[in-house]
Each structure stands twice: as structure tokens, then as C-alpha cells.
Length: 237
Ligand SMILES: NC(=O)c1ccc[n+]([C@@H]2O[C@H](COP(=O)([O-])OP(=O)(O)OC[C@H]3O[C@@H](n4cnc5c(N)ncnc54)[C@H](OP(=O)(O)O)[C@@H]3O)[C@@H](O)[C@H]2O)c1
Image (cartoon, rainbow, N blue to C red):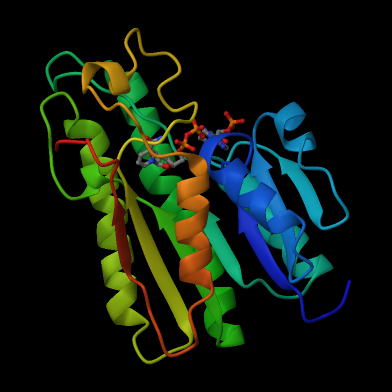
């Protein structure tokens, strides 16, 4: 590996958005990837010389520490943190499964804040780095039955917005992508897929998200893209 490669940590890389980002970067020699999620069989599909696979539960602080240790011992630096791991639980505040809701908040908020906290220190020390967060259009507005999910995404917006200001003037950047409906595994357990309940004929694809990511990471050093909302054309929200 040449030292000029950009080291990328991609969470949630076993499916959906994280997997698609990993697929798009893994054949580009400019990048060395470290991909993570719990399902090792899915991560193994990304196997390549440019990809380190480390399976585990991102909610565990000790596992996050292992990821950081692996990257710093092997590469001594890290350039991109893609915070893609996430989940969704819906239901009215009165009726939502409270334990599942708390697990979602811990994943979407606690795990993201912890990992960002750790890698920010690396980025600040290097004087270079980029955090790419996946919020949602529901990080900007609330809908009935989506209060808890929106709360977790509002927290990611707050994280991203605070960092934007705290990092102003440095070469450490943060971008927060706010997609509407994307076809992934996020809604796989729903009895009715939101594309049907919301009459969205053509939801976003992970390829659309990859295009946005490529746009963001290819900006020149003086340009910051703090937020990017993307909606399917017929997503009324
Ligand atoms: N799809 C959409 O419509 C949409 C819209 C707006 C925003 N988003 C956001 O985009 C992000 C990616 O979602 P997606 O749509 O790509 O969903 P997805 O296909 O369900 O992917 C979620 C990823 O998170 C990982 N993950 C879940 N729990 C984990 C844990 N405890 N430890 C480690 N990894 C864990 C999953 O891997 P394992 O199960 O293998 O661990 C999987 O790789 C999420 O934050 C989501 O809220 C999605």
C-alpha cells in the first residue's frame, strides 16, 4: 500500500448505503477501506486487497476501540469516517416498543457520537479528515409515528451542525446527508414498504447516494458541503 492512500472507516457496510459506498470506493486505488457491521458473511462480499473487514457490534465501546486501534496500528492515520450504521423503529410515542426504541437511539445517537468523538481526535491531530453522517429528511422534520426516529436524526443534525462551527477554519470537515426514501434493508421487516404506503413510485437508490458521496468527497479543499438533502421526486413530506 502506498502512503498516499486515503484511509476510510465505513460503518454499516454489510447492506444498503454503507455497502454501496464501500463497493464504489473499493476498486479505487486512492482509498484503503476498513469496513464494519455485525454480519461477517455480508462484509465478506467486499473482500479485496483494499478492504479490511472487521465484524462487530458498533454499540460496544470496546469494539469501537478495537476499530480505532486496528486503523492506527496498521495505517497510523485515518481520513474518512462514514457513519452509515443505523436502524429505524416507528410507532406512536405511546405505543412504540420502548426497548427497541432505546436500542435504536443507542445505535443512531450514542454509537455515532462515540465514534465521531474518537476519530475527531485523530483528524484534529492530523489536521485533516472528513466525517460523513447519514441523517435523514426526518432529521429536519417530524411526522406522526416517526417521533423517535426523527429524534435520533435530529441528534445527528445537531452533531453535524455543532461540528461544522467548531471545525470552521480547519481542514477537518463534516457533511450530513439527509435522504428521503432509499431502497435498502432498513424497512425489511415492515409489513407494508413505505414506497407503497407513501406512494413513492421511484425511491432513491443506493447508487444515487453514492453519487452524492462522490460529489462531496471530490470537492476542493476550500469547499465545504455541510448538508445535502436528497428526495425522490414524488416523496411528499
Ligand atoms: N433507507 C432509507 O430510506 C434511509 C433514508 C434516510 C436515512 N437513512 C439512514 O441511512 C443509514 C444507513 O441505512 P440503510 O438504509 O443503508 O439501512 P440498512 O440497509 O438496514 O443498513 C444498516 C446497516 O447498519 C448496520 N448495523 C445495524 N445495527 C448495527 C450494530 N449494532 N452494530 C454494527 N452495525 C450495525 C447493519 O449491519 P449488521 O446488521 O450486519 O450489523 C447494516 O449494515 C441509517 O442511518 C439510516 O437511518 C436511510
